[in-house]
Length: 242
Image (cartoon, rainbow, N blue to C red):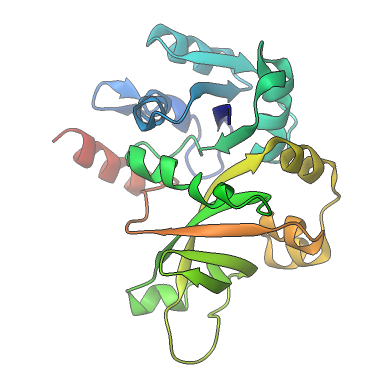
């Protein structure tokens, strides 16, 4: 399969404005993410942004960038536009959406997201991590995967929720919002209207499940640090300056 990694990056952030260009160990955050994506070796890597200064910073460090519209409601919409604009985009079979605020992500985790697509019936692949801290089990900001186990490292997703679920004995899984889409699945997904459960839980991936699309999750061992606040940014600086 021909695989393309797209990294959506927008400057407008309510909690940390301008975060794609935030300096971490001498480089903009978005450059660190692009570097990790290249190190994963899964395919061509392109940053999709609505801000020229972000594109310039990415290109100055030797990576590829494409300009997209500023009015997209989600990263999925942005990467779909980017795919249509790229030379050679029509030959891509799989699109991996890596969030632009994961500067410390392990390259191997990006590659792991592709594994569920070995099953032909899977439309979208994603990642999960077993929750080990009790406070995260009840934290609505920690999204949980409710899924049917297919193996020791894979779930078929039945639902995603901010609640503590499923009930009873057994592991709970934290959803990592990194996705690998088959091209046809991405095109179908962005054409769907927001669904009732998506609106209620404020979780975009429920739109795909409500439309009958199949999402499988590969279980990995660590949650990448997402930079959403000044405190997160300081943690990333400490990690990457070592």
